[in-house]
Amino acid sequence: MKHLLIPFTFAASFGTAAMAADLDAVIDNYADIAQAGYEDSLSRAQVLKTAVDALVAAPGDATLQAAKDAWLAARVPYQQTEAYRFGNPQVDAWEGKVNAWPLDEGLIDYVDPLAGGNDENPFATANVIANPQLALNGGTLDAGKITPDLLRELHELDGVEANVAAGYHAIEFLLWGQDLNGTGPGAGARPASDYDTANCTGGHCDRRADYLRAATDLLVSDLQDAVALWAEGGAARAEVSEDPEQGLVMALVGLGSLSFGEMAGDRMKLGLLLHDPEEEHDCFSDNTHNSHYYDGIGIRNVYTGRYERIDGSVVEGPSLQDVIAERDPALADNLMSDITDTVTALSAIKTTAEGGMAYDQMLDPGNHAGGALIQTAIDGLTAQTRNIERAIALLGPNGSGEGVEFK
Image (cartoon, rainbow, N blue to C red; front, side, top):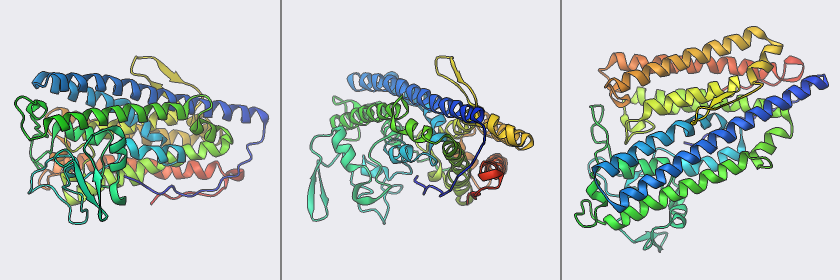
């Protein structure tokens, strides 16, 4: 889901050359963590591609489960990179290619006629897999050959954000299918035979396989672009490094926007208010508890300047926490305490889901214990956002600069 970047101004004067050097080191570490996170995301996406190719070559319960497991593993490093959104224009311009949601999945494939469709989106049930030609603005879109280029053309078709044709969630839908259980137990249950051309269910198994492979190839390509953005000489690294003081505020704006408007608001509070499982982030796979948890870990990574890679190695160095502690030790400690509380609350959701109560079940209006778990995390995210606002104000000119209020 897209958010407007919150405008801010920043013209700090930190004073000494030593402090300037320290800020350079903080920004270098911030960019190094970003690069490592996207490299890990790319590595896991390449494993997913291998699993998808194996599924298409030999459809069966085992190869489908292996592809699902690879998708779940791929989400772990990627979700941690979301801490780089919102404050970094380069990332926001790119991110919609890989993690756009929610989606009208009927654009891609068959859906239950009672649980699919959107009156405001003429392509909500277009079913590209079943239809090699689509009527579009008085003309015809040729979808006869499903390729990454076609998916790029279909993505946000006709300017509608819900027309998500590519990225993690399109792949998730193709692996799991719709979750038709509402707030009851169970995730999507797409059969492996949806990819078996000899014993095809769902129709058009060859085109479904083509779509899944194209979407996975495109995800790998897009993540290669993200790695390049943060590599030495990359546009995103250059943007935060050009003015390290400005880069610090960009980083904090990203953390505040992800904490409040995105997580506490769009991804959590909206679903809780509506008791609507369609508002959960990983709605086909029932993996939402992990997506929320690793978003929280990503915020902690950026604040503390420490990221544990998928191979167990660690990228760490001078951090935002260090800079804030130089000027207001109490604020630095309070924000760290808030982030710790939030991660604890998100961990409780994760543990409960892994124990058998999925996130969509927590949204049931009668599930007061589940709703309380979500609300506790929302409260934690809100509290840490207020201290992020204070940190941004602290880093303004002479410690009394332009503040940012997240709404």
